Image (cartoon, rainbow, N blue to C red; front, side, top):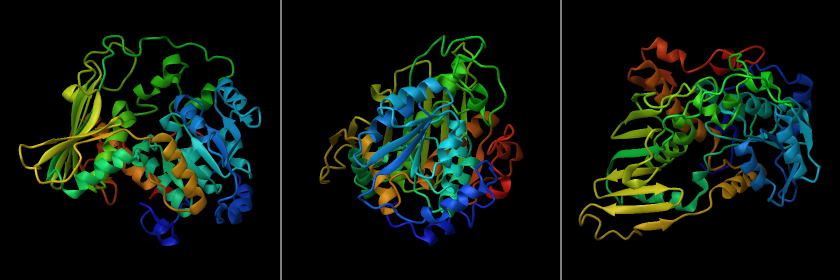
Length: 444
């Protein structure tokens, strides 16, 4: 995915224009004033002025790595819960301005890039608006709440010639790169099955059954909900457990699964499956969450199958690993996770192959941040370009659609359409709570 971002690269594959992305919440005057500036690359000697949108757990991890970079100046921090933003501002010795509304960050003419570390249902709108305002974006995974939003983000990036890096940081880890190279080289033979999984045990209480209550002082709960349905405040929904609710996310498969599935797409050099099926349910957890605690999703590709497994009531994973990825080849199996990789030969089939059988870990996150900043300056595509992140996120979302409908989904990856199933197709998008919208005219 490396290479200069040409006008053709931006416009051809991802749509001719994002003019119809009807978010309409940033003034035309601002966009016009930034138009000329947006076309100019940043000098390698200049500071990159960054604004943070979202100051939760992932926001903190991102902040800690961005602030260490010598060419970064953090000028703004924003969170709907003001105490979080204020805490981040203290780490800049008070230099960063504090905001509760992300639009105030995007309006600032001095900010070059924004980091979007919000809950999933708030990834798309700030990213699209930032692109339209001439800012580059580092956005967490999954890229969006649903597939239609993700494609809108790609189009916004391309039409406005923006660098958008997705937080699937394994792509910047050298041991992941080596593992992918080994699979692609054919050294483990023809891969007929790729398997990835997450196993944990939260039986029986799960996230608990905390009743609804009043939001804490300093929290704009209405803004936190944003485009999602109106709900009474609940501390579990507001916590890091937001991923356990369909309103805001998609459970473990869109959370961790996006990371793992992305590595499979990368190593197997594919963009999309031709069909997806899934089964599972909420079998053991007695809590207020509404996503499954057990799930098996099966993806059909030409020439191989991929399986994603989630167990929320048993933490014994494959070969004793709580999570990971396996590529099952005719000559050997390769396992990889964030701690390293290992190859298990099939008998003597790899005896004449010159390849290491194990590899240790490598930095991923700080390196990923550095890759983004370098690409902001060079205008090269980053390691996890928005198109790459969108494809991986879409895979996880298709698993959820198959699970929620209880049917096998036939998928047209080129047009991003479900074939012959209107009910399933409705889950490609969502209804937006006013005034937040992503215009269908801009999505096509």
